Length: 101
Length: 203
Image (cartoon, rainbow over all chains, first blue to last red; front, side, top):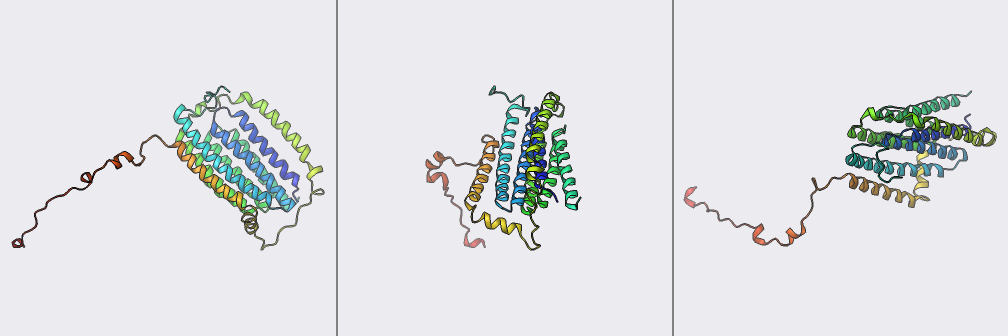
């Protein structure tokens, strides 16, 4: 039988891969958005694993809402990306520094 | 090792391998395709956890809609491939060190001593006539009906925001001109034309 800790460790590994992706990809905002998707998938796996092992469906409901919010986030993020590309002609992370942050 | 464990490890391997391939992919379109493979593995793992509705939703919504949207944007933007990965290696050692530390800490916290099978036993499988969709729908339309409607409003706002953001200025927009409509006179719209009526002898 697969234990709960197996699922939790799997999702923490996926979470860290998404985190490293955000660290190392300094050139492409699309890949940053995809790494955020990866992190959300890891979190959702956590929710579903706990929902299964505790016998409570509230975790799956929560994942449902996370999927909704993530879809909205991607739609708006890609719209902003298109706008940025139209204005700057590039989606390089290092070019988008007008806020000097 | 039971068959469930073998399936779990195969799916986990593919999930992790495709995620790694995604973040190291040189081409953004290839990264999207690796992420699709990762989402398929994740959906299979969710089916192993008896969350069938969410697994199908992940494939339909994410692979079918969101990833295709990513591909559309990548094809539309026509990114210069040579600039990608130019400053790639600079942050890689730091990122790997941080990730390994996080994985080690999480393994200590989430290991078998805390969440193993003897601490948290695996629940019995549901019967064959158990419906995951019915269970979720009963919860969703009673206890969580208010957040459910808020989610619908959120999606509507996302549609409007995305369309408003990418719309260009006045290119092809149909709109009313109120002042033109107010100051119009009847003679501007109605034109009286005299037509010679056919004579009776002509037929």
